[in-house]
Image (cartoon, rainbow, N blue to C red; front, side, top):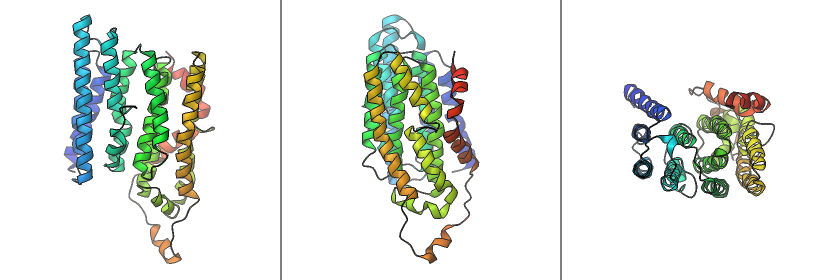
Length: 348
């Protein structure tokens, strides 16, 4: 793609998200979301591959449906209450429609089925943008709304953690596994959103760091399915040693960064007298942990069939930038001791 066009699209992508962040009026927020969607579509379809075009079409139709629901709900709220302000969602009907519309935008269960299929059709760089940056604007709206539908959010959160863990068990394609991982992590954030918005924001930031390091690792190794992970030890041995730790951090094991949000969320749910919800969420995390362990096993404890002649040429110098990978890997592995500082920074 022409660098000028790419720069324009990335600028529009950032501008759309920034407009949504800064808006207090529903029409302005809707405009920012639409700019965001329209800016990423050329990035998705740039390879002109039939699968990429199909995934782009699915993504566009899904996002257009969610945007129409959002516009309808905000208009209904203005009709019923006379308010266009994002923080003035007092009527239960538009609030429920808006929560479902934003859930469709970010891919929460039970309106999640588009996400694995769409992510599978893109390359890893576009998939990284879709899994991280594209979640920010809808999540900011959910944070601003402060939705009062406790039961709905708990149901959405538990369904997402369960389906995110269950759906990834039988997958062999890495992008689909990461899509189900995204659904499960978003479920944890939605679960705690109404009780502690700052904790939901902390979970989102740690999720972005962990997912970025995972996508960049697979991109560096040029891996798109589990079988191709077996050759990664010959391409970059040091990174292959660190990758299981990144995956276990995604699974939420101590003493890694991924343990921090899960630990704090379970603690907060227990304080809110929801021990059954906390127990179910912890049990569904075990499902996700299984496929992270499966990826770790495939990467470090299996070897691709080859002969000695075939090993040496694989160790070629790559031209990809490794500084972002090093930065996100450090965040993914080493932030747990900074938990008190993170809580102090995010507390109001």
